[in-house]
Structures are given as structure tokens and as C-alpha cells.
Length: 626
Image (cartoon, rainbow, N blue to C red):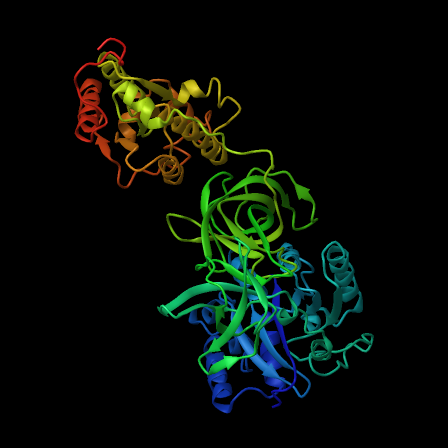
């Protein structure tokens, strides 16, 4: 073994059962990189889970999970190392099933080359094309098409050439710099390490020869210096250091750097490691940098070269690979994690979805599991970032569901979007507090949520009548009434429901700023949007009222005949029938509308508002004649 030869990272991808694991097993076996005890274990496993009769099943060298062995498929990403006299390799074997596409994207994220396998009997499939598109988006410059199982099509040259033509036609529309194609049989080893006597018509290199001569691809050390700050260390008043992993470029003592996104500048005075100080450090090294100046810097900031700083933006355009079973909903708030920085973000404009078969840009209002889209995102904080093609670590991000902590998407930044420079907030002298004092009340949003027919609107109406009788200033925003005007352009898909609540939450926030007690009566089926509405106003200004009425009671009431239409199939996406309702987990008020009449329910809400200081029950005349 020679540790001085260079390293190539590559990923195997393609559709399920195209032979990826078997091919890697063949590479490991034929390069003599299997220990005797490991080979004995695989031989024993082959007798239990193997698919080769009495022979050894080389796929089991990679499919280590028991579930994978039982099903004969790859579920997780398996990383294996092997080496020849010319090069060292780390290969990521990724699953082919559609539901595990996220694992393929993970395995491809650090690869220099993509090896796409295609079963010669089946030809190029949608998953083959999807994996190729993802590899291209992730900036992989070199792809090898390995047409596998040629032994099962009698080594037919025409089969290989037809598959190669189809794949090259697709790859021509992607960003690959190099496309190679080789016919192989992972089971027999044909054209893997040795040339195949069965395919004399193929005069190209073997698979291993292509891998050994392929360019190593991305070299992060050649990029601009970037170090996301993981921790600011200050053990005493005499030392302050910024610790992190260098993800791009090289830093040297005396180098001028900036702290993004603020772009405050300083000079590197020391490069500190556990083993002592260094004069320089490059991508892949974890260091602590001491700066000459005490500039404002914290976890999530990025130290960068001053001559090639990153962009500082709170909006950007990006490609997104959607990885969740629940569809993407534009305008919903997600957590965005980029490097060491986490902030909230929303997709403001889904510009198109990419059809993986044709690469055509399709109009779309949402993305489903494994869809690839191009969109604009808006963040609630400015971050430091780069286009993904320039620095992959600071040009990539993930989106996380705020309630479940599931990773729902991976993204690659294309470019930052600039705000219109002529927009600035106008200073207004009359404040919310002054408006509220004039009205002798503490403004808030009283948000009634529940199923259709639960009694939300009726209860809210009774509450407003009581407020009016006390001389209070209020306004009732009702879901049906709003759809006659402001939201008349919206339907009832999940995406439209999210936008419906976003708009009404912004209106309610303005009414709170005006000093009003605003009553909102909307089904508002999703917790995420109710939480978004809560976060728009100050602490204590959002009162969630869950009108908890069982579905069977609501359906029996059916005041507008909507449940009857939904059950008959005449009304699609109706909440409680086809569309889910996510009940509040910790509402301020719970009303059992099946057990009390509307006036009693209104009394409960009024008592809560009095108890929590939003109003007293003495009548007022609005301050005009007291």
C-alpha cells in the first residue's frame, strides 16, 4: 500500500437491483482487499442470504445491515476503501429505491465522480436519470455509465450501444465535463479489472482503468478561504480565539480576513492546533484562529479571505431536492442550516420543478418526495454564503421541519438575491402602546381554531358582542368572509391553506399594532402556520383558542352542508375528511363546544382575557367622554 498516491471519492448510483453492491464487492475482491476472516464471514452469509446458489454473493461485502441482506437491497449509504498501486479510493454505495433518494444525495455530496449502473435488461430508468441529475446539481464533473449484467443479454453489443446513446443524450443536458461508458458484468468480473473475452467488440478501458485515470475533481484547498465558526473561545481576558473546520482554501499567519456576514476585517495573528501553532492551515483542518482585533464574531459567522469574501444576504435562489413524504409548502417556515448557522426560512417563489426524464422545467406549486425544484428563499437573518459551484460547503444547506426536526430538503445555492435598495422602514411616531392606551385595552390576537362546524365563528361573534358592550375596540376576521375579498384567489390545497393563513396573520398583526383586540376565526389546520402567526407578535399577544368539538358532532351539525358534499366526493381536500387537522398541543384556552352554549363559551374567553390583563370588565366609552 502506498499512502502517497492520490485519493478519488466516487459514488455508485442507479436504480434498485442494478448491481451496485455486487460491483463494489467485485472491486474489493479482485483487488485482494478482503481479509480472510471477512471472506469467510461473507461465504457463510452467502449460504443464508446469498443469491448465487453455492457461490459467494459479493454484494454482501457492502450490504452490511441485516435488513439489507434479507431484502437483497441497499438501504443505507455504505462507505468502503480500496487501493491499487496507482490510486486510493473511497466509494459510497447508495440505495436505488426511490424512497431512499436522500441517501444517494448524501453519498454524492463529497464525491469526485459518479458511477451510474444500468441493468442491461431494463435500460435507462427514471431513477437512473434522477440520480444523474442530482449528481450534476451537486457539482460532480465526471460520470461513468456502467451497463451491468451484460452476461444476461448474451454480451450483445447493440444492447450496450442503445443504452449508451440514451444516457449520453440525457447527460448532454447536464453539467458533466466527462461522460464515459463501459459494458460490464459484476458477477463474472468482465471489464471490471480485466478485459472481457466475451465482448471483443469493446475496445475501451476497463472500469478500474477509467477510475485510476480519472481526475480527482474538486480540491477544496484551491478555493477561497472559508471557516464557519463553531465556537468562540475566551478562557480569560487575554485570549479570544475562533474555532472551526476550514472547509475551503488556506489561511496563513498575517493574512487579512473578514468575518461574514458583517464583513468586519482583521488579521490572523496565530493559527492554533492541539499539537501547536502553525504557519498555515488548509481545507480539512480544524484550528483555532486568534485575530489581531476584537471584532464582533460568533458561532454561525464565517471567517473568509478579505480579497474574496462570501456574499452576505437574506435571500437567494437555489436548487432544492425535496426529501420528505409531506409536500413542500411555499411560505411555510422551516429551519435552514448552513454550516454552523441555523435560521428560519421560507420558500417565497417556487420557480419550477425539474422533470427528471426530460429535464424540462415544469410549473409547480409544490414539491413532492424526491422532486427537484428551483426556488427563491427568504431568511429571517443575513447569512454568509457562496454559489454552490464555487464553495460547496458554504453554498449548501438543509431545511428542517420546525416541529418534528426531520430533514426535509437539501439545497444548493445558485446566487444571492438583493433587496430593492429603495425600501426602508418608515419611522412612525404614534406607537402601538399609545394606540392601546387610548383604547384602555391590551391588544392581542384571539385565534379560534377547530374543525368546520365546531362553533368557532359563533363563539367569536359572541365574544365581539361582549367586547362592544364594554366599549372595547375589536375586529372579527372570519375565514369565510375573508375568502370573498382578500383571499378570493386561493383554493383549498395545502399550499393555498398555508398562504391563506400567512395573509390573515399579517393582517391580524397590523390590527394588533393599531391597538385592537382582533378575533380570528379560521380552521387553520396546520400547527406550523399557527406558530408562524404567534411569532409575528410580541410575547403574550397571541391567544390560541381550540374549539374542541368532535368530528362526529361537527358532521351532525353540518350547518353549510359541507360534510355531506365532502363525503359524496363533491368537495375535495375538506379538513377532517380528506385533509388532516392538527389539533393544538398547548393552547391558551380549550372550549368544549359540544358541552356548552356559545354564550357560556364566550364568557370563558372573556374571563381569560380579564385574568391575563387584556381588559377589565368595566365599561368604557373609548376615551372620548370619560
